[in-house]
Image (cartoon, rainbow, N blue to C red):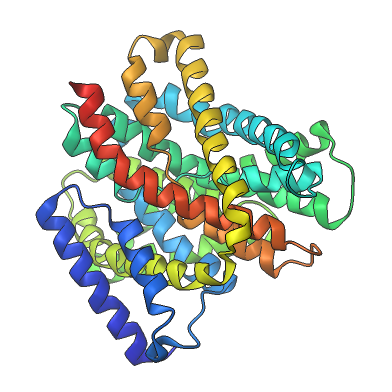
Length: 395
């Protein structure tokens, strides 16, 4: 990718984000992805591609840290039951339920084994509410629904990656699926990532006291976001969950012990610039990358899989709300539907697809095509539809 190409992409991102700032309910991700798909056919952008290394190791750690660090600690406490259950137990049930249904339905159209069906389900479980949460906040009188969708996304980015990696390992080794083996690996990688993130987040919150230069404190946050991610991955545990846990811990500690200092102000100014910059590049590049995977013959089954993913997610959310008393008391059925519909697929789903494409898992064309189209349908339909749905349910 040439520097001049990056500059032009950032200019496009600037224009889209500026329009969003003025309209307040402008769905940025699908617009950027759509523009990216058009740019694919422009000779100036020929040769640009989004690799799994660039997305997973260079862009994702920063986006994860920003989301976790900026998420309200108060909102996390208030909605802890809903966020924790939906992003763990709810996510596992969604993967198993959607995978099972996809396996049965897809058999009528294509040849998929059970592990491949579960891989599709794992790709479609992480949520990416980049603009959906801001739209929900502006469409409703309270911020609870947006906070739950955003908080769930923080945690399930990590848990979904752990599930996907475990399933991919099984698929590569041509092993049979074992629920207990799957859960054992899942718990080891997930708990290990969360623990190392909490420890390093706490350490960094103390380390900032060794310097009073805001520039150096920003440097330390960059080192933590990327260094911790790579460190956790080198030990075979979840770098995604480690980075998320560290960001949350850092935010919590700053609120608790550093209220009179200006650490947070300097970090906010830096990361508030980095976030839209990276998001612009990510979604434009996703659109340019997606074109190669869009095959008309797969649109029918992909649309069915997308609808199934919405139905299964809605069932899981509604059952969770109805079966857990602390959640049932605080959420109405309308809010449950909005939480379900707000679970837009995006960056993490594309990360998983690129990792699958780069793996030695054999022929993955069918899984890639079905999943990519389903992700794009989610970006388009759910991002655009969440505002009118919120208004309809509110009335």
